[in-house]
Length: 609
Ligand code: M6R
Image (cartoon, rainbow, N blue to C red; front, side, top):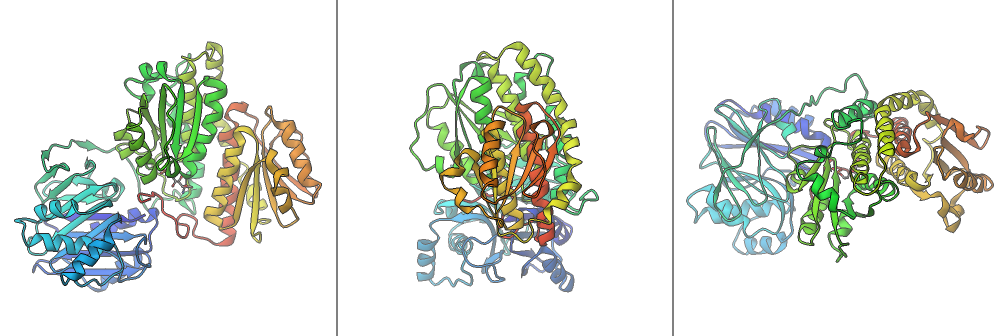
């Protein structure tokens, strides 16, 4: 989704801004722009439809010196992708970039137009530029003008503004869309994601909801939503990310698929004792909360939601705790019943997904005992606003399609199952067995990745297909859903997932030789049931692709291709069986020639509703 980078420095900042934008490219965008106040105090603005490279080429032709500047990658919400709609937007001396959506942009636009302000774009963002311009006339500083203007905005914004009449500062405001201030020596920066600023600093201040801040080369002043000066702590970041480093792989997605054994290893590291999971893995106060909890409400979006669906099977069957799972965008707009002694668990790779964050905030008012975030980004809004946090240690995930974040989320839930189970009747020897299985998981994942070549060959058979059906049962049903999401997302093939027992209630009508059916079939309690479902498909001429445990005894023939997945503890099979489905969608996308790391219309971090 949209990305922001800004700087106030003595040196020329355009290259820093462009590099920052390149580092945010993975989030998905359709146009890019930069504005710099040059040494003569004039604004130079360049915007391009398309990739940051187009913008960089334009900058190369038109040098843009200056130490104060802002830059943006836009993912269209209001107004088509075009140069005119690309940020920064300008109202006379005021220049603005913005992430998020201004919900009351229509009445504001009307009011401003009635007062004579002329709009040159179809964006909601241009409203901010004119509004701040309007307020600047009566305010003694850009800071005050922004403070007055943001009170009139409804919706979500992370916004950065410059004033050519006061060129040595930028003012930023955060409500609903993240912003992080990067602290340098004699220079300071702002971005929507710390990854953008890693080449210039590792010290960051994370702004809170409602904060407005004024940033100069040598100072940072932060004010809360009531206008009080506040001290937000600076954090040293240990995040590593080299935007150009695909580690020899053709795409970030493939690199991230292959990183999963190590990502799981590091997510487990230091968190398991002989007896089970250490409670402090989830943060201070986890033991007290876990002892009281009788019910878990999980909320998340997309792939993270699928992790929550797997967790429901585990929490109810192993930890003895009841569990509901809901898509965050539904949960947040529904009047829900809070079960007694409930904990809310949110899951998110980014920790900034707007719907998940809103669901957490709503839950806080509803009387849950406490909140836990399972998240991959330290310092993200979700982590900061939750009582407890389990950090997946997947490392930066750049591909829009989530891979290693998902499998490490499942590891987080496996550990939560053990930690809660301890207080709800999970026997010591079961805990020990689960610990052993978890420790063996990275090696099993490594063995599963050796199937890549076989899966690449199989992918040829999918490239001309319009549709695909994924089947699983029990805790493999969400894995089928995840497989279908991956295929849609990066290969643009329409894919659906069904709990295999549901086939005869409708989807069997779809079966013919043009509909590939992918089945996940570990050797678990439901195997025989699943085999019957497979026969129902076969009897109707469907072509099956079965990922199965060798002991499940599926045989390849004219109607069925079988790929044997290494044997594993059935409990952890959902994690293992995810990998072949990721590889399948990756190789199908390669054959189809899609933009694997940045699929069309999608954004890595969905910070607007
Ligand atoms: O950052 P989050 O985990 O909260 O993101 C949620 C979804 O947007 C995300 O999982 C999305 O579905 C992925 N692109 C799927 O691969």
